[in-house]
Image (tube, rainbow over all chains, first blue to last red; front, side, top):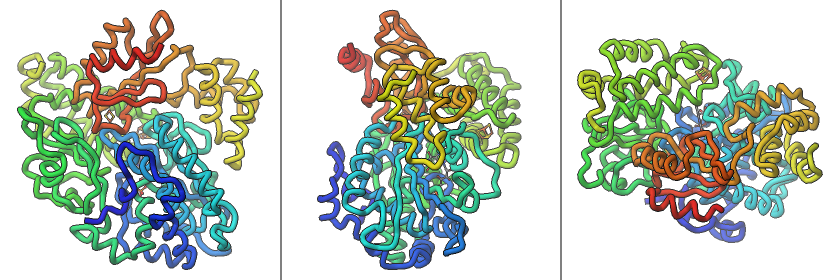
Length: 423
Length: 154
Ligand SMILES: Cc1cc2nc3c(=O)[nH]c(=O)nc-3n(C[C@H](O)[C@H](O)[C@H](O)COP(=O)(O)O)c2cc1C
Ligand code: SF4
Ligand code: FES
């Protein structure tokens, strides 16, 4: 089985330096890319079927097609790599950032070339300090060797790549909030349209792309779109970093073909549940995705199949709920996070999320009332896409809505008993 | 007043951007690295350097969770309180820390050795429960392991 994204990553060891990286075929993708036109690169990526790995799954080639190109396009243009990873339960981008910084830099340059960007920013959350050090060292090596900077590898293309360390806030990961943060403002979202490809960083054409999405590019250029499509089990293209946390035997992150069935992830890779624990459900791709249950173990974890059972692939890293963990407590934990991270811009989120979190806290503590379930149902109905300025609050409702369906008896039991049965 | 070192470090960030204010978060973190926290005076100095108003800088300083607007202890304990760590027993650790150090989230020990702060998911959920002490990440925590780790931070 091919594992292009993690081929150079040796857990527990420092990443490859420039020389070793080049010996293993590093910067070959960049050399090949520079021999083709930017539009040819865009076409290859579109044909590969690559979709965003940051949670929304937007087709990458299509995203690039909205960037104004050619000599008359507005300059400068920017590429931004989203390394803010803060979605609870998500630990995949850190593996790539720490494990193979040159691979991220090489693919960042390829993406920048494809949209004719003049500068690229790698936007990193503050807590990823190991990644920051390693990226800084790798960037310095890449500048020295002429892979970044003026006239890259003797071509006519020049690019500056900068590392931006942000100061901590979940909203920095939302792409328009990220652009505000990068400009030195609060990370509140921007209205769309206009989309960043037209009006982005400092009002200039900009593409924002997730770390894992970016890291695929050098392989697509080296081996082609058909090869990339063949990596997946269901034709959507590529491998995926999947992961699991919670009470499973082997929590971790693994690179596997996109479309690997849920049951295989849970049993073969996560090793099943810890002894004495039973599987009740899981959030498949971070905290903003809806629960999957034991009925869903056959679902192929690509972008399409999870939607047919009411959830999303999200970030691909699952949070597993067992029978000795209280689902109400889990929901309280999630909503407290989302309420704390609300940017405060719009009312349903700023006022609604704390209300939901307080209601869940009351139910968990045994102070819940029958009418509290109506309050929760009401918020799930009201806080949805189109009612808020960005997807944070609707994302917070996704696990709650499904928990109220799959674990309703647990909520009711708390209210009836006036206590948490797990305590 | 910003020290020469602080000013140079901030200026090295400013050159990455077409507009100086883009470096505001990094500038605040430069100051914080040298002084432990960001005072009112530092907010005014950073504002002057980046051609912003003090209010604008304050708006940033209070928005981002890594910027401390009050003095903190010598070491910062960031205990992850997100979902995977919660499932794996984060609450037990918090109770242990509270008993051991006599402080809760957002507080500093009387000897100014530790400040305890909740952190959103630290991207190490497979090692849950986890914490960061200063720049070091620790996973698979138990109360005993916690005691032993804190010994390393005098
Ligand atoms: C509240 C919120 C937080 C987000 N955090 C991240 C993040 O940390 N990293 C990321 O790549 N995408 C994050 N996203 C998704 C981005 O808005 C955007 O879709 C993504 O960076 C696009 O890159 P992709 O197409 O390569 O996935 C977040 C979205 C929301 C609404
Ligand atoms: S939903 Fe509204 S308040 Fe919540 S984070 Fe998005 S813009 Fe801010
Ligand atoms: S939930 Fe604690 S590190 Fe992810």
